[in-house]
Image 1: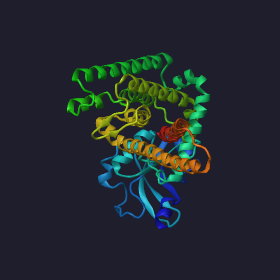
Image 2 (image 1 turned 120 degrees about the vertical axis):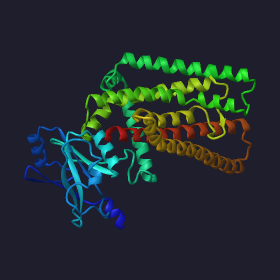
Image 3 (image 1 turned 60 degrees about the horizontal axis):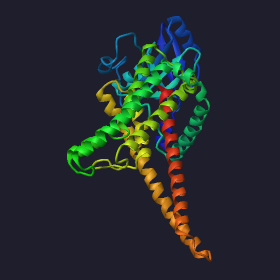
Image 4 (image 1 turned 180 degrees about the vertical axis):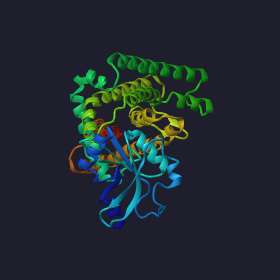
Length: 404
């Protein structure tokens, strides 16, 4: 219980600048900070706690020397984060006009897990250093809630698809570049599928277990091409946003999300089309790979493709790409396992119900009819669980987008 209380502890930021003492509470507006920003002619501020409650800290006043070296150049002011529950304090530093992306990087370099950011007239926002990190993000109730919220939000984006040109413009690009991307992705998808078929024909056997065959399957694997190309496209848009200095409050980020969501939905549709083309032109849509296992064609590839987009879009180096891809890989693996387990349980339940029904009716049910009904049930179950998992992925994408 103590641990849970610690996670939800009420805190306040204290700092003294220009002989003026300022006290501010997260998730509320602060007139004192607004006046301070006005006097400093600053747009925003960031406050970074240098430790966490309950952890031993340097008792000397000011910024610990080892952490001061890690701070970028600029004016940093001493402050403290006080717990309103027990009056415990931890040291912190405050600076002006530091973007949230940069603040997240600074906090991560300092080895802390949170920071506070605010701008004039808006509530002070508390942010986790790990964008995807949430205390309850892996609980079943939270996953279910996010999945259905994501589905509802996808439907809203689908209804607003007529505003796609506006959504594309909000993403710092234009329709001409989007159509060029579609042509490149679909063209390369068709070419890759044809090349794989030709390579297998030259090798003589698609089912060969040679290392060359395995490498060809990995290189032309359905999710790789659309995920990489669309991820690079998104990365360019993210970089443009960084260069423009766009930094939203939480409310502004939510509003902007509704503007750009049709653009993201169009990109997902492009990935789905590319995956379908790849699995259609390849000789083996369902592939057995030694270290990936049996895949189920288009749907499995699309799930992995969707989870790969954000790590590629937000990576700034090979190192950050691999580090950010860990959770995406886990999420994709769990999604695929969930679908397989769900279909297995659906088949068991269907067989059980057929057994009861056959024993109750006085006539014999045609085997063909049983197969047709089983096929409808299986397709329906797969589409349902696929939709739920994509809703969860969409919700997590929105969560990351609005917290940048």
